Length: 228
Image 1 (cartoon, rainbow, N blue to C red):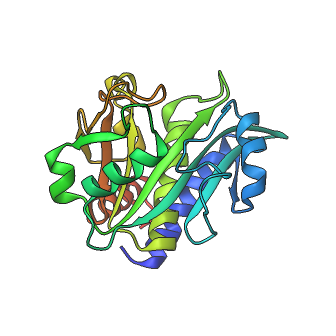
Image 2: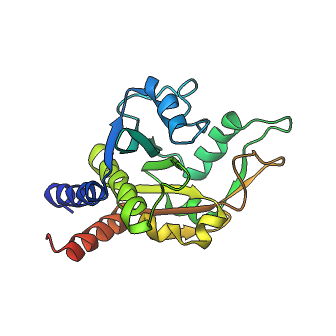
């Protein structure tokens, strides 16, 4: 998918949100993140995104927030994980020990074999998704274009090989992986050492897409909107 088509896709999704009365704001002024995220109903940041713990730069992470009038109603974040020769399994097990320690060591004990074998290179991880109660709206109206914008920006900004997230089982039952535009869904993606972190679970799903499949999804949407 060339740069022009990516730009067309971005324009389509921004227009869809604008038609719904929503504006998207991109934050790289990280000092503003906790207060703005709290306004959307998120009382904390995960360790990998926590401003006081993670030394992110404008080249390693960004936040997007949805604004309706003067109110921030939702937001999420993405970070670059440039693994080089390290596998995703090794990366997750190594970093989770520091991010979620407990008196037994903590962290991820094992990672599903498909992730260990297939997911590698330059990755964009999406997390922190939160909406104010009652503001998530219909899937196609808000959540779908919002997540597609994340994916396009990650491709443009970081030239990634994969884009992925972890979602709880209840979201998978609602098939939010399809709303997000992902093509891969793997159950029980990580096994956490007991006691599991309060905010994570061994029942989480990995949802994501390699670059080629992600671009195919975006190209398909362009055809649907007849702007090819």
